[in-house]
Image 1 (cartoon, rainbow, N blue to C red):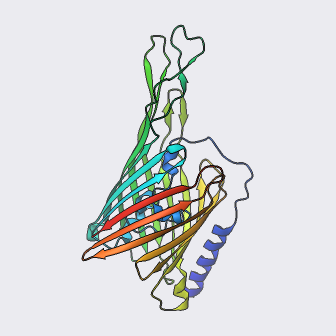
Image 2: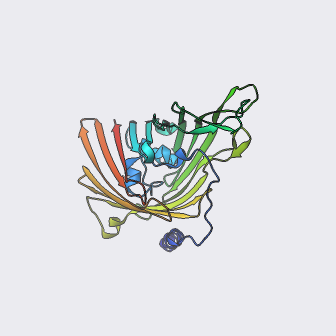
Image 3: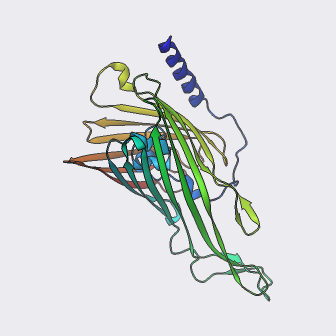
Length: 333
């Protein structure tokens, strides 16, 4: 009976995750602080962002904070860079400490560099300006960042939970809105929260779980209020070679169903094959995206006494824009 229940759960989750989105209306332009949605981990990006179950180191804090509870070392450090479109660059770092029975704690940070050549128009309601705008000759001062504190713990040998509280900020130049000509900063800041779970039913290496990212109240630029890109994810993952018996090199497959606040439903699917615990080959696909689609990458792991070094690269195709490259570095001990 237990095996029947496990098989039923697997069939149900697989069916839910592989049903394509039927909605025909795209929900767009409903949220702000879009930098929070960008992949920070090269490993995750190479797997098509199917990562809420696969993440088991410091990079998991950007996807499902429950994943850091599966860290196998005392300390884990992560650093990544993403060469995004329009000369935008994202930088991320994370540090996780495994405190035994107390749980696992982590600190993460994201910084968005919009570049030095942001020249454009801005609102200008100062006296004598009949146009209502002005063209800046100097680059616009813009940037964004997020700093998070995570905690995760395995409540049983099958059920793990995790959460993250983060402080987010975005600054997009300034406007001249009042009659005395005083400049008003376009700046928003506040708290946001991530939650996640991982359930291991006991069927080989199968994992089932969910995450909620960017839960927060409304933010506001002057008179315009908006919400963060709240995203709900549910996924299932497994080393499918477990079904063939004992093996040395795992083939990890994950499928995630995505329900974002600002778009129709999406599917992330990806896999990772690890050879001799040294090299990892990854590939994935992101369904129902206007720009993103096929993803691939490679990772290397080096061990030196009690220190492990991980280097990852991801290549993501785009429809109109140039392809995206990501690099990640990890150190654990």
